[in-house]
Length: 324
Image 1 (tube, helix red, strand yellow):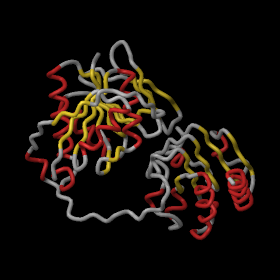
Image 2 (cartoon, rainbow, N blue to C red):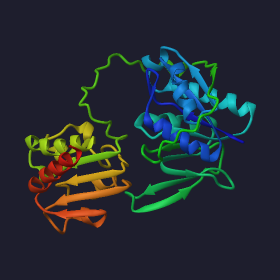
Image 3 (spheres, rainbow, N blue to C red):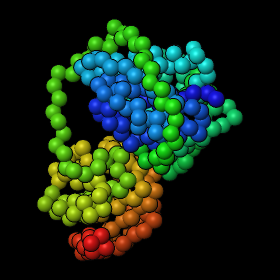
């Protein structure tokens, strides 16, 4: 069976959920070979093997932390060449983060292959892996495959359920030679992001977002309370962010972050196309808006016409009561 390279997103050896989802998808089209880079790479092996990696290629070097993107592209290219030389390679899968898409694009260019970004599903096809994407602000669903070279595919978080499938997970050192471009852009400083205790927005299974209808930064406490009762991440529309009510890092939309959770709750959000582009692939969508004609109601699974200041606190109270 052909092998599938899976780029591992981890923090000091702790594998992030999108990578485990990639392993699930990779098993549909071949045998997953994970590529873990940087500090703690070897510590990822157990988690990767538990979720189907037949092999784990590791390489630790300071370049991955000290410089931007290119060292990781060099390493992934080295893994591609090593695996291709030893057998058949079905695809290269990368998490669809901002960095992941840059890595994937650079790799595809180097190896002369086509690329598919922001896939939401993956299946085996007669002529190679077939990826499902949401196009034109999720108004259409398309199925695509790469016609030239080894497909390089980035996959959105929450596109597949994590499934354990114990495999060998044999750890092998990856031989990497960094290119001259690898040290072109140095990281000069880092500022730790302040932890809220909530899930990462793009990876959360549940997202609760507030928009213009929240009517002020002080009122986002209502949105946060509902999110905390559900163990959810907090999002915001562009209108709320532009008004300074919530940080830009929490913006959901075409110019913010794209999310695809199991449950998306939109409160006080009209549903402009800019916002819909970032959340329309959510599995279940619930909206609370006092305007019955708001565009958001055209795509929801459940809609509540009412004042969010009445509805959301009642919902939070009901959830906490049931949990208690």
